[in-house]
Length: 387
Image 1 (spheres, helix red, strand yellow):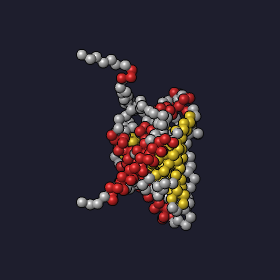
Image 2: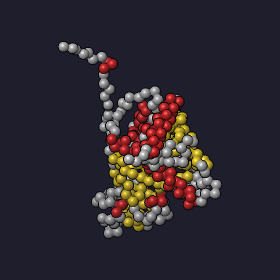
Image 3: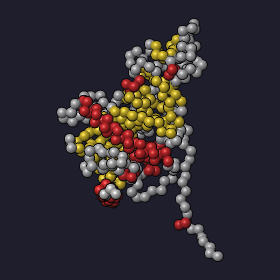
Image 4: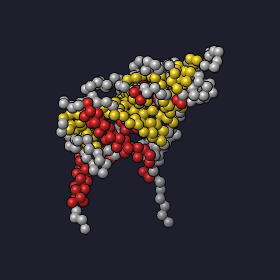
């Protein structure tokens, strides 16, 4: 009878995974393009484990309230905008943008306690944001959304905008992409040439240069098969990324701004949104610029579809096993944790400046070789005679 002994070298790594936090991140969250909400109708947005109603007052200023009327629970998003108030469809109680009841048509007076929650809003870059804080504090002055130069001007296209509900995943999954260098090749068929991360305060940055190859099966072609593109992407808080891209094409250098943002619906679902705008090249009409933005947007849609397919089938893992060429996953998650604790519990290691550069020399060479072999094999299969 042969006996085997178990040593540390024989230990099998187990996946550790805690339940998703039931708390929602503190910070600014984008609800989409502002113009969406200026159609004279109330809009329901399911977010942060509840429902909100968004409406524009008579001056066009966007207001956000809790959706359910504090009188008898009617859904204000199914009501009407009357003047500067939203009227409940159940009993016509009127609610102003500041959360106070402005009138009850059938009553002699409004109860002094008739007040609902009004959300702090910000309109920037032609987008609407709400501030969420479990402690109820207003946003600090230094925590804001930067203005994107060119947004809303004739030099740039209009926003091409999309959104999709992701169910069964916590929104941390998308945040991990900030440091996940290798997935850009295996999931998106990009070859990173340089890769750097910088975390400081409430901002997490990814600087990357890459080549993008054409893939027939996925119909991905950004017009820059062998040219190096450059990306400077930063999350401003837990959920809003501005990604500035420079891509070489036959027509010249195309400057693009990609918005990658989300807001949580439940602890295990979120709405992913992405928008693209393109700077007009010399001689390009506004219509052509909008078409190019839509084209880049469709490419972005395909890349997110690839991510979503991974998220739907992967396991949640709190203790990923990493190699030298992987990015600083644990440091990023420590940075991200600052948005899920009380302000008093934010520690220096969550906000101190941290920089990390990956040496992509070996990985890029390997991926180029692998891609060349795949292209050659595909070409050979296409040229095989039909029996």
